[in-house]
Length: 105
Image 1 (tube, one colour):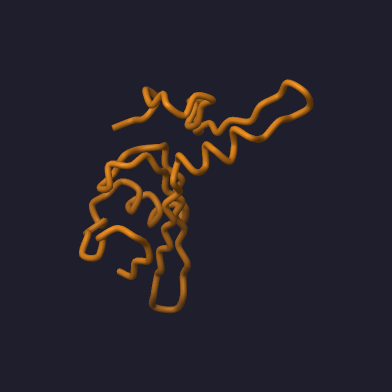
Image 2: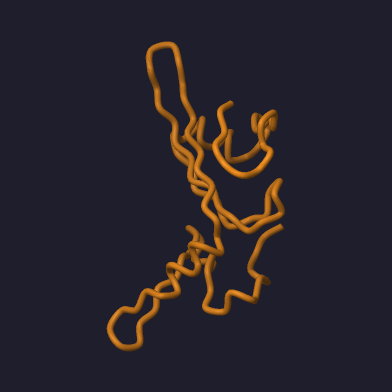
């Protein structure tokens, strides 16, 4: 595993994690927002790449607080707003960044 970032994640074994199993099966995975090892709200986007004799998994962790700040600035027309929803229509961002009741632990 190769890791780039501010957290001490070298040596973490993701082999039994649901996201890893799904990305190996489907070729991609987008998670709901969750706390994970770091206990910080984030979501995962992961993809696989096949090469002869090798399968690579690229996983990106998106900081939900940063992403929420970016999305909450989006306006559509005079009154429209933008939100991020999961595949079941459940909000993954919201207007009040202080409220965290929507986070799945």
